[in-house]
Length: 128
Image (cartoon, rainbow, N blue to C red):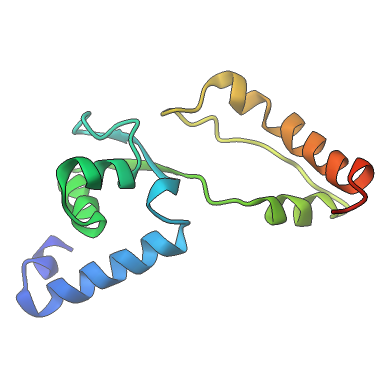
């Protein structure tokens, strides 16, 4: 990919595609770097990193990838997604228990929070 990125004819297209993929995954604040060889990025989302380095998020993604490795946690599910899952006959809620700002306590409580929220909206809140 970096060979293509260094080609002036392809660089802009790669940056545009990267920008689209960031939006598709929920936006800058929804993509948390949880592991990479450059530990300055760990525990920060793309919005925070791009503000700190004063450059575009697309270039940040490529900068992080140049370190050789990156693991990202995406926080892109919304309440409507959860409600749609909860009305299905068979639903299993879980968490990958990723690192970063997530603690084990919040990972374990994912199911209970989702279920409690669903019950409140559907029963107590009369579906609103």
